[in-house]
Length: 491
Image: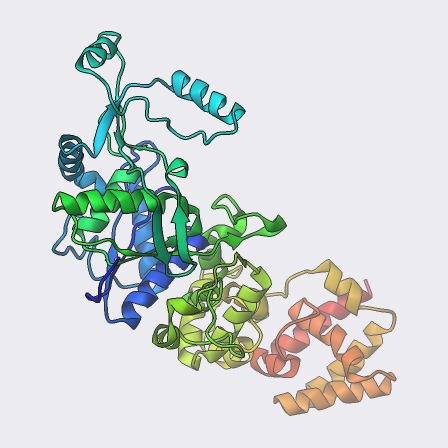
């Protein structure tokens, strides 16, 4: 296994569809491991599946890595000593390695048809035996090969697994053992000559001198096959050593099922669109299988890097909890300084997110309200509903809020409140005193008294601190909205 050479890890996604949070968690653990050890992160694109890969997804991957704050030491846009870093540009490399494996007897041509394979698998299952490939084409005479080819049969290339038990120490799960009957010969090149993942992935890891392979648990069953291939590659001079493997726990979604990239909450784009901070999302994702400490869930990414240790990764499945993710993101929003928060909100204060005209936006009003908003929002997209009353000509119409706040007698309360607000000094303390006095005259405590005022002015029953909001909105606009609410109540 891997020696004490400098750490080299890789993140090697396929450009198919939108990036998902499980992929991000894998990238995070590899990046943090590399940075913790002062090592190298190789960013590699596995794009050998022309039917599913797309240039759009490739660009999304790069954009996502940049948004998350992941820097890479070798890979697209940077280059490096092992370029190119897109597998679609390395086909000659895989063809050469496949040829060497065939010539050395580590691989062979298999002429079995899909129907024949399925028939033999069914028979093995019926007999209670392992149903993997049975090695029929391991030894094919020249005459039989000629007969197969005369029939027009195509052949794939299979790797010849050694007849021995394979044991290795997983960095997360400890010692694991696989017996020969459970790891049959496997395909490495398709009938059309295209290399399979089973070949290209370990070949690239070998040539790029990867020392640690940190990946999802779903790939664990392929590890003994790759270890056997590595031994063959070392014999051929293609590889120097076998990397250490660590298989990260499943991320579970609803119903105790593995979180699928088809699940809505798995899409990275969802969190970007809602206004998660990269730091908040990464903080939460790091907790899916790893622990910073027993009593601390919120931390910065540099703090995570400083403390990241594979010994602290738990092999048990981790459950994705959206509420927890939101809570941690809210904590990170609170940690921003005022300017960073205001800047982060900027995209949501402009079209298409904002529901007010661009010219209605008031920078001074925004800067005044921002400190109150920062303590309330969970994700950045919450900001529009919290501050739109400042930039709209009229508050939003929310029927549920109106029905909840505007009870019998609300018109009388509003008239009293209006008179006191009109006479008050215009600051938060004086505004509060005016509403308190209005409530007292009508036998109402502050909570009941301020509800009609809040809905009249902001349109909603919940929002930012009311009296500070009214101070920023201004006396004239506040009174005009109270008048509008009174007209609606008495119509």
